[in-house]
Length: 175
Image (spheres, rainbow, N blue to C red):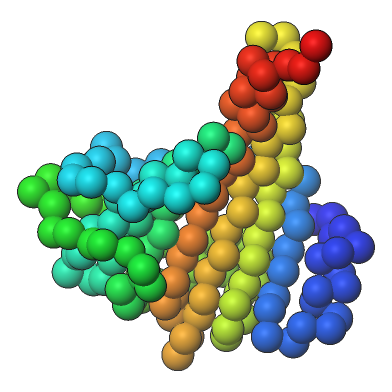
């Protein structure tokens, strides 16, 4: 695991936030679900083409999001502020294939991620390259986990697909 200067600075001067910066791809199960993502109803929208679909589940709330830079998801114990959440007629994923969900213990979650989580806010960033059309592209996955009472209270993941951004910028070249 490699720590960069910003992460180290944040760790030294912000005792409420635990951070890790990892050179390599995230665990595959972190990005996958048992069921296909549901996109039903009218999405919450925002800047940069943001679309968020929010669902009320038995364990809390699930938000699937996407914009021009990538996509992500959130599991939360409380209703996300400013979002219209609905009950879906489809199956909503309340955990990823890795097994992380609202209520997962700090010990189990730390073991699954290979990073020691702490009470409060935790941020893990994976930086990695992959070849697309024989060109190396940098990707980044950011995982924010809030731990309360030794279990996951909020889990928020966003996977930046820089190839999408590069293709978008190439389509808008200035001449």
